[in-house]
Length: 139
Image (tube, rainbow, N blue to C red; front, side, top):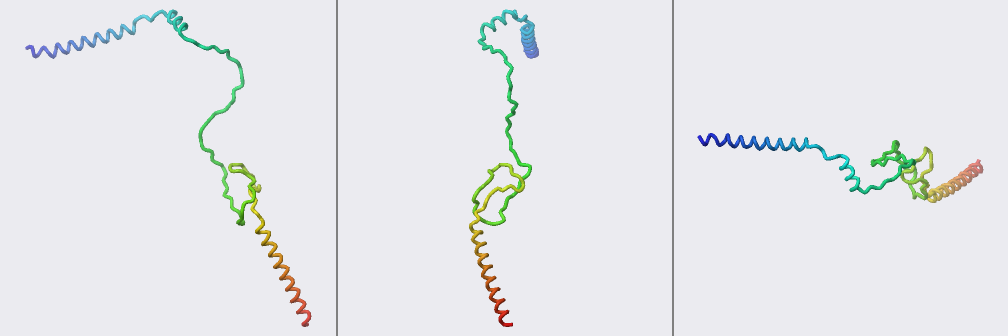
């Protein structure tokens, strides 16, 4: 018979302890708050605060953000002739317009080739003149 009563006694003890805990918690919540004026004055005495007078002023309208910028239009540039770039007229990332000069290639090689071609042309014209005179003389 004693063995049957032990579980009941333990269960009743646990229920009583739980009831006391709940009762104590509800009393702590329903306890009247301390005097609000006394608390406010104590808080005012303990806090050191700097006071600044508000003034109207212009604020910048900026929004710092992080991201990646991609161009709407991208063009691949390619020179029509090979050569050494003599002068760049724009910097990387700078916007350009259609037809704008971007870089200048050193023309010295091409100027020499043009001079050579002109001298070849003059020599060929001289040969044509000689041939024409020869034809005229043989008639």
